[in-house]
Image 1 (cartoon, one colour):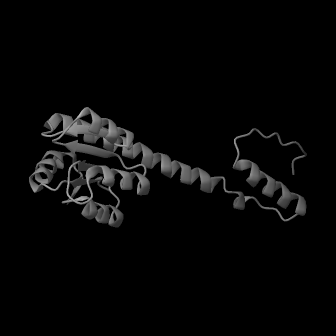
Image 2 (spheres, one colour):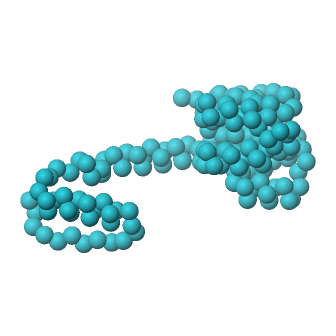
Image 3 (cartoon, helix red, strand yellow):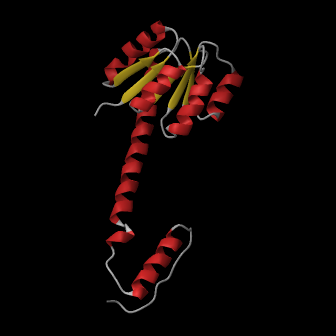
Length: 174
């Protein structure tokens, strides 16, 4: 499955330029002209990476970043702006941006940033898949037993599993 990159900018030419530059990565490109449209597209089809302009009418890039971080906490968001300042860069990074670039973005800088973001997104997706596999493999419902003692032991194990502690279990096997 192709990675999906959502490009958000109220100036269509930037969406076109980014799309052309990123087309060689073999990714699916989705564009939006503003924050509200981007959010609707992200909710309909989760992106792997978001590139957003900072200054846009309506929902600006910082507001979009905040909502993306809340709803899709592990999707890397790259903030791109023509009005770069140290203060806005710090605010974006504190807000959870993966990276911050200034327009016009050099081709190599954009490609490197997006490759890193895609790699990061891939590692997080693999981590989620492995956690799901581990949780299903070691699910307490797979343990067989009907005796009251076994039910009490399973209940206790479930309670202890939610804590960060070490447990020593003693007893006969079988």
